[in-house]
Structures are given as structure tokens and as C-alpha cells.
Amino acid sequence: AGIITYGAKLVEKYGLKQISTGDLFRKAIKEETKFGVIAKYFISFGYLVPDDFTIQMIQEYLEENINTEEFKNGFILDGFPRTIIQARKLADICSMFNFKIDAVINLDIPEDVLVKRLSGRRTCADCGKSYHIVYNPPKKEGVCDVCGGELILRDDDKAETVKKRLDVYHEQTAPLIAHYKEAGSLHEIDGTQDIKVVFEEIKSILG
Ligand code: AMP
Image (cartoon, protein in one colour):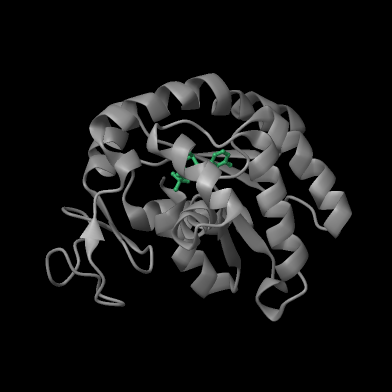
């Protein structure tokens, strides 16, 4: 959840493109594409979208976009991979598209803090920009600063669903920490620190 805050800053500083599988799914749901119909069901219950669909979606996205100008300085994958199978597939995708992973960053945030952050998050129903009612409020309550859209609490940010997402995280995503530690590319950052401190640490990792 945390990298979204930093993604925009990294886009600005390094000209990196940000790819969020969560955003791609939300867009697909809105446009009612084949991925959208499947994703909606899983996301609303706090489950991961099955690996096959997720991998197919990101692969199609890269095929269409990787040679565009926006990608020439590299990119940040936000929310992907989330399972060991996705991580293995990502390694294949790297060789397929001829890029390499420079760093894997784990923003470590205790569960109670995370629940507070997610339950206070509000997302623009139109453009997808995230806010937080306390830490990053919009200028006008309930209204997106950028596009004037309505700010909503995402179904999957509701308390019961967040709990389910945490169970899913422990079961399916947490094993990635050991996986990337072994590969030697893992960097861990204390995500409870001030946003500025976290961003400085991310910058020093990226060099
Ligand atoms: P996010 O915005 O990253 O929190 O993603 C929202 C929801 O989309 C997640 O709770 C999952 O249901 C789904 N999702 C996003 N990325 C992935 C992924 N890499 N694999 C499976 N499901 C995903």
C-alpha cells in the first residue's frame, strides 16, 4: 500500500514509470474488460486475483507499452509480484523484454498502523488518485483535487476486507521476502518513518 505514496515522487525525480497491478485491475473493472469481470469478484472479497490472469494482464500491458517513451528510464512495479509464482514468472518476463530488477523494496509497516492507513484511505472514483483523511487530505472533503471526482472508500479498504487481505498477505506474499533476500536484491525500509525519511532511503537504494 505504501509505495503508491512514493511512486509519484519517484516518477517525478527519476522519470520512472509506475505500473500498479491494482490500478490496472481497477481500470479493467471500470471498462468491464475480460480481466475486469474476473478481478472484480476476487478483489471485492480481499483475495488475490489468480496468478494466470494477473500474469497475462501485466504481460499484455508490457507488450503494448514497454517500447514507449515513458518507459525509457525504467519503471517501478507496485503491487506485483505478490506470490512466489508471480515472482518466478517475473524473472521470465525480464528476459523476454530484456530488462533486469535493480532493487526489491519492502516497506515494513506493523499491522495496526496499516489498518489505520487503509481505513482512512479515500480513492477517486474517476481517476484513481489516493488520499488519506488525516495524513493526506484533499483540499475539499470528498472531492478529488485533480479531477473533481468523488472520493470513495474502496470496497477492499473496508475493515473486514482488510483483515482478509492481511491473511492473504501472510500466506501468499510474505514468502517473497525470503525469496528476494536469497536472490540478494531485497532492501527493507521501516515504513512507519516520516514520508521524507522513507523517500530519502528509497533514493539512496536507487542511487
Ligand atoms: P492494490 O491496489 O495493490 O492494493 O490491489 C488491490 C487488489 O487487487 C488486491 O487486494 C488484489 O485483490 C488485486 N491485486 C493487485 N495486484 C495483484 C497481484 N499482483 N496479484 C493478484 N492480485 C492482485
